[in-house]
Length: 234
Image (cartoon, rainbow, N blue to C red):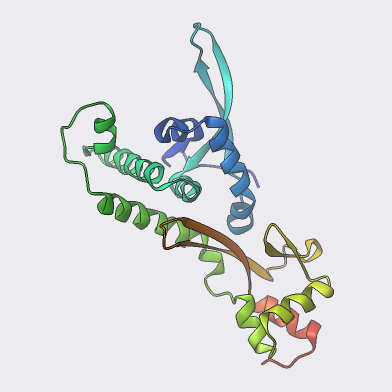
């Protein structure tokens, strides 16, 4: 479904994200395209694709395709960024929202890049706290549709099966298939409300961020499996 953004909704383009984080725009566009399918499955709409006119060094102009993202969409994409880029994006959103409220917010990262120091730079822990708080809210919204669903491990227990055997049985029956490192619902069963995607963010002991999206089962899905497998798990 095509994305429609309300007129009073604040947005940021992928061009702005690239400039703010110091990334090439083509790489930001690539990251957005890769994450879009999971967003569509969860929220039911694509990211809004638009374009901007860019002034060339020789004085000419050219039209460049870009994405126009809301705050939640933007911070969902930011889960793919490193800590520094994510912090810059979070502080920029804080600055935009303060301006929208008619307030003034000092963005210490921007001033420090310009060689100025009109305000104190937050500690790394404080920046990460701000980033994780806002991104956590974004993930909460992304996972809202999977809030009351069951993982494969939980469903397997209702059938007195190990999760390995459970997944193997469903694969043999054509109910699901494995691709991209995770289980996916068969195409002919999509759109029936049997499953929902859940996104999980964790960190290794070395501080490396790990993002995992996996399929969970709704109560309708559990009833469907119960009918297919013939096990009275209720």
